[in-house]
View 1 (cartoon, rainbow, N blue to C red):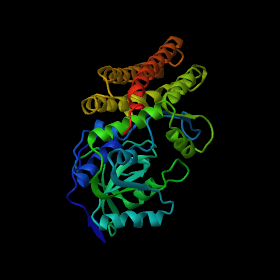
View 2: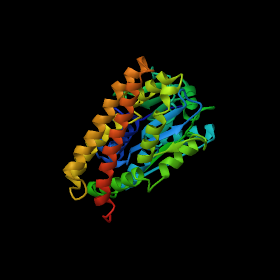
View 3: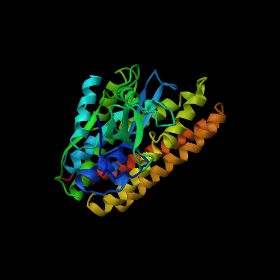
View 4: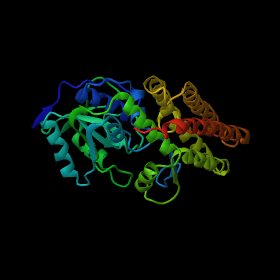
Length: 350
C-alpha cells in the first residue's frame, strides 16, 4: 500500500518543533506565523539542567521545555492533542491511519536513527512530520526542518527512532489535529503563553522539571527555569577539577549554538516573539522587557566562544572564571526580565 499527502507546504526552520508546528498550523488552520512567534506562543522558553549518566558528559542542558507543541495548542485554542503508544506495531497503525485519512501527522523520535540525517547525535525528542509511506518499498516520507521537499526514510529506521531501546524515548509520541479551529485571538494567546512562561521560569509551575526528571529516570539532579540556570552555574564551578573538563565545555558550546538546546538559540527565537508580543500586548510587555530579552540572547551567545576556548585550554582557571561570570550575567538578566513580566502578566486575568 502507498499513500502520500501531496499538498503540504514545507518551510525550512531553525528548530524542529517550532518549524513543524508552523507548517502544521498553516496547513490545518491557515495561520502563517513566524517561527519565533510559534516558539513563544508555545511557552517554549526554559532552562532545564539534569544529570544523565548515559550521556558523555553526564548531563544535559535544554533551553526549551518538553511540551511546547502541545502548549501552543493550549494557548491558541487548537484541536490538537499528543499521544504516546508503547506498542510499536499499534503505534505505526495509528499514524498510518492518519495518513490514509489525509492528515499530516506530527512525530517525535531520536534523530540519531533517522537515516536521511547526516549529522549523528542522540536527541530523543526530535520533531518531524509524516506525510506518507510506501509499504512495498518500506519507505516513509517525512517533512523535516532542513529541506523544502519530503525526505525518504526507511520504515525500519523510523520505527527505531520513535521508540529506541536503552536511551531516553518518547514512546512513539505523535500529534493529531482534529479540526482547523482557532478559538483564541492572537492577543489572547500571547497573554496565556506569557503567563505559562513566567510561571515556569519563576518555579511556580514545575511541570517541565517533573517531566524531564521522569524521562531521565527519576534520579540525580534535575531543575528547570531560573533554578535550572542557577544549577547549571553551580555545576560549572565543579568542572575545572575534572579530567574530562574539555568535553564538558565542548558540550555546552554545542548546546548553545550547534544543537540549539542550551540557551542562545532559543533565546534568539524568544527575542523575536517578545518584539511581536510588545505589539500584541503592550499592556503586558514593556519596551524594556524586549531589550532585556535580546540582551539575554546576546549573553548566551557570548558564552559560546568562551566555551570554545576552554575546549582547547581546559586547565585555564581564568577562562573558567570568565565562563562562570558570564552565566552569572545571564542569570541576572533573566531574573530581572521575568520579574518585570511577573509584575504585569501574573496580575492580569485572561
